[in-house]
Image 1 (cartoon, rainbow, N blue to C red):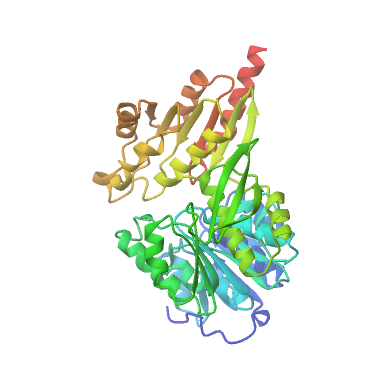
Image 2: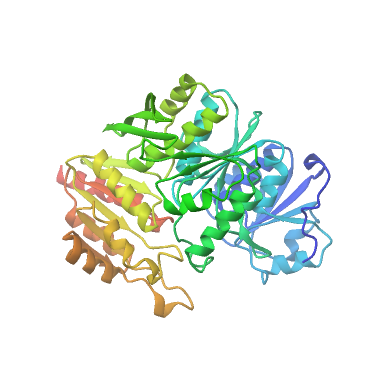
Length: 484
């Protein structure tokens, strides 16, 4: 393949027909919507065309082919966007290589069509990217700055993960995962940051990075992209972030728990799913903020948003308005339903740190309630032994932990994470009741026997988890009807 298209030097509006390979991914479908709303004719292909993405794309009147092949490139599009899921052996990629048709990766396309004409605000880090991006996009919207954004989760306020605005700012979720089979560098290296946030840096994505140093190298490259007149906003509670931030050639603003940082907070009070706290700026009281989330990590995410908005000149009053209007993010401490005084919560947490912080936040947010954690190790990293020990402490806030055994990874059968081992070690070291299960049906049967009124069930997975949320709610409703 030789027609890589960073050389595109004509206006985006002169490109009419764009074909997207791997269109049913969350980000790719959002990009399809943005391009379609910009006036382009969009077609796409994928090997897994089913709801909700198929329904979403159908509503956008985008023609999607189920399966890959040369026929999907007829008639020949003006541009092809190649998703991260596409390998060089994909039949459609092979067919593309025989054409004189330019192509881009997802992040290249995002930059070419939407970022380069705006000031880019990039949220990066191992944890908290989606929540911080969503909070920033919502706050900018309510501050009447009309932002454009592309985020990895559905922002409840907008009911979507993208928006085309007429304002000067683009809010981007800076993912360190690799770009495409023809570009193994991190996605965020394409996002042209003017103001950037690093929330945290830990080892993750074991299928992409060999070790923590490799992750740090990706962030070093990212920080080097921020121009001298730009700003890096860095969580100085994380020493890995401090190390990388010191390589920046731009201004650095620190945030975290210490009053010596540029931004910090104190007097944190949580009630009814909301957190109010006092903000300290440059060592002096700045004002109070209230946000509809719980947990120290979400207070820190809010601080990062405040720092950005302060840099671009948003008033304190406008910040408060935007933050108070924020309605949350789908799959981030999202209450899916309450039946018989049993609360079912969905969260995307999968890395040990994210699991730990999410459960700790829910324990604070639901005082006096029994917290039942249901966890599915699903990512390539979480299904390998690399985090086997780290997950033990992650469940410290739980009263009961139900853990599904992971699906095998081809080629890593001898390096597979063991949920049974984790459950045993949680019981021995934390004295928390923990059990492992081979499938989701077994977990639902255990929940049917174990749950009692007042319980909070936190279901943690970065995938659909066999639709366990809706199945559990249905099961609870049936039990309630039988009991009555």
